Length: 623
Figure (cartoon, rainbow, N blue to C red):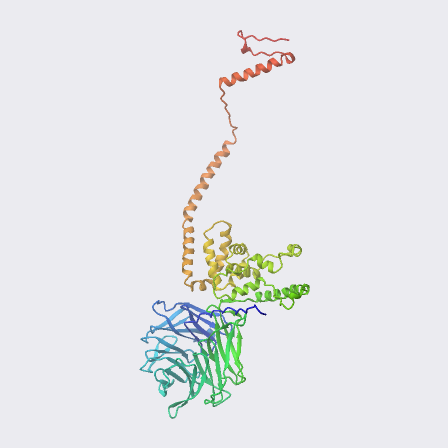
């Protein structure tokens, strides 16, 4: 209609990219460095299994690459050992396991550009800008071999899936044999130095990327003549940041190529022949779970090894630093684009729980029932043709808050009264009166929702109402479902509230204990937590430092009070003696008053005269 403007939905900011990330050779593990914290995820379940905060412990150094692998222990019954290797810009290589850093190496004189595990994780290959490739024992850090691969800086280093060939890109790109450590052939660099390179399983072809170009180049390799020829160029909309390739189980003369653009979209080409130019790529992208409009960039992707069923599978990792999600995508020959849907909004680092989803569905159903009578009663012709919007609910406001770009408090969020009014709970007095006797106390499934809303609305009153719940199960579950952003907000509120005394502090302590026990690793990984934890420590230290003197004072007071109480009990046996001192004038006034009373009663009661009133001191009685 005229006059109505369509407002474009706000763009959701992309989550921060890791400093370095990589899948394990089998795709079962994923390692990444976010904000100087190294973490390892299991791709099947998506849970974090290991984490280390800044293992290099050098503010002048930074992380440049990472690799991870599951290494079998000496005894099979002991299971596997997870080893993570990280390279730095200063040339250090560190190997880490669950116990911490197990060895360091400074073989490289400058930046380490790539790390790769081989031989079931027993061997670690490293490549540096200094043109050297090193082979280490991954358990001990012992250097097994050293190859001077290039006189010029190495841009990229890769090992084929079958671990038989190595590709080294520099000013001149070379293909090496892993077993013989010898150069097989060279690739010309007419278009410029190759920045990314990947080698197929059998070494028949390579995939490469030259800087500032939006295409992936395919090279056919002839090991007999030691030559490589460019056979195809695979176009992309953006420059790639990851390139991978492997042989095809369906086409003997073809291959499979994967490239992930810097915008976070994966492209997969299934080539029937290496010279196939006009081939469409299958695009893999990730959408937000709420509006399905915003796109979440793919952090990393890796081709699975060729399977017997001739299917192409791709490991995909996407999400935020705190919550990563992993998918294994099966591709077919239709080349149809695949849109994955995230189960959470990665930009706000929040996960939608199953209970919230069920409540959303129930709320939608209830709101539709409430909306039907309204539509039937609306018979105004001027209102016909207008679409009735569903009444917003409390959970709608929660979802809107989840989509926020800025993780700070949402000042535009409606108040609790407005949320309850939207659910028609305040206006329906009869319904409220009928249901009020059967209302159950808040449960763990509802308190955590109210807690999140109060945190994002900065509603201290509602936060206190949540803290007054002393149920241990409710506290543990509500704290466990908080995101790292909400954890920091709640910690700030606790530090502010802990300065008070009385019932508030008593209710606060179990919540604070649960928060520190459940989220300490997430808290210490953020720089802003240093000031909060320092303030908390100073407050606790100030309170506990007075315990000894307060105990001495309390003991002394108890002792003195007991003696006072004993003295009072002994004195209660003797009745008190009260002495009243009266002046002469007071006595005379009393006597005068008595005489006046006596004169008025002479005729009825007779005269009684005090002897002190006569000079002779005799007593006179009148009948």
